[in-house]
Length: 322
Image (tube, rainbow, N blue to C red; front, side, top):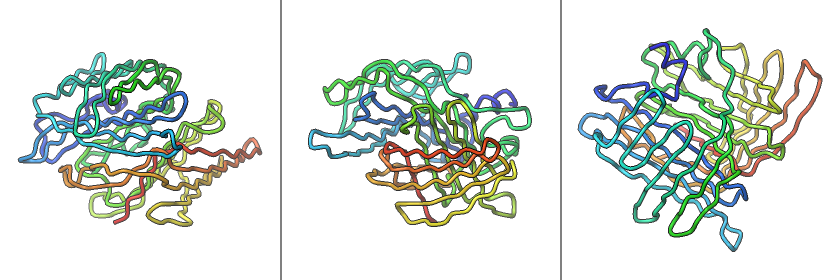
């Protein structure tokens, strides 16, 4: 069990649990930054609706310089899902997801997507025995509503996907991988990710969520920023503080602070599509996500007495209100 906790990419559950979900989030952006596509393979074990699935969210900059976003949810039987730990592999139907490559053959009313992409060396986060994942010590707490894992903040891609008979080259593009598992997504949360800043060596992840914890609830947060191989961590479990200055259904401004640094994040959803999220173990909650959101960051490093600003126009952003 502890080996899996320290290696969150592995399948954390089992196929006999009830009201349980688990999903991996693989994001890919082409080198020319005109195409982004995320695949979300997973399982839903809600009683009476057990199945596996692959969701996708696709963003493309067309010839008129318009950003087009489309999403889809493709169901598979539960027995079409299989996995192995060493080496890690998840297979759903003919689709394979690993730590070194992904291979997809997807078809629905909108798209036919097929191809294989190689994944380069992962940019992992710092962990310790007491803080085995991005969740810190909460990773060891049983029966949390939702667990989260950061697999790769940044990696290079190699290969081509054919989308509706059009070849999209992802070689030298960038990828990102995270995952969630448990019974439900939080009833309200903010999620932001991007590794496409003006500085190519910058990658950001942020999650602020309503957390039920036994008989109490609290607002938990985790944020990881890597700039030129320097990692900044802001989290509930490391005495950091968070303030949400402004939040609407499409934008949010957050300030995070600890003794080492202060980080201001401004995020805005520009174009979005509908994804399906788990609620009480069932995949029936509609949420809005965009892959071309705008994010501004301002980092004040207290120890080095430096200031860093950057901007991204290819951010994944979700803002879910109760």
